[in-house]
Image 1 (cartoon, helix red, strand yellow):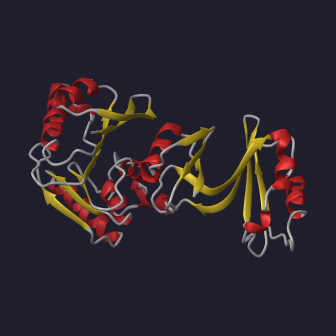
Image 2: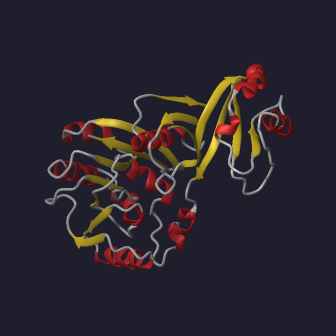
Length: 313
């Protein structure tokens, strides 16, 4: 089924890469923040940076819309009742477009809330893309922000960003390892996706935080161990991690930690998403460690920090 993914405008590049990593289409089209691509599954509980998804109906130029509406077989998708929503149009109102659709239906009934057939027309750059509503992305992640967990850590990733990083691996099942798990933010999101999650840390206090947080969300498919991220041994389908980079850790010691970790990770997986700060020479470190950058995304945090999300193979 060809779908329209309505991407977050905060970081369209990362949102696009996340959706494509899961859908794995042979081809796609990006129009504004609308990603049009074939997708066989419902990713509502997985996507972190997509607002909603629609079944693609058709596209046309704005001036062709009345003719296109008349030609389309609306009865094929109609269920019980319908409503029309319009985004970005200065030429057509929702009432005008809804009336056009209404005239093409055999037994039309309008229901503005909780409709069985929710049709949306996106106006973008002189084009119109029509879609049938499929799902809104899961918003429960907002209740899992760091400050809302039993044990918080100030540097923990926003849940939507953690989900995006996990999804960049493209894993549908298997084991995700976070060797710098901290308070467990990445593990929580991986576990809720149905993936097996393993977390390592050398800090006992951090492991205690992670254990309490994982129990709070009822996750039983997660395992915690006190292990060194620079001495990895057990295989994993993917590594997703956000290594430490506090101001007190800057300099050669931090670069050595990253280098040792990257060398160690090569022994256990060929699929990794890692986050580095922008103030280190991450390209040189990655090149020396034998990894290759498949995707690179910048996420601004504040004036002193931009996170670099890297998909490595």
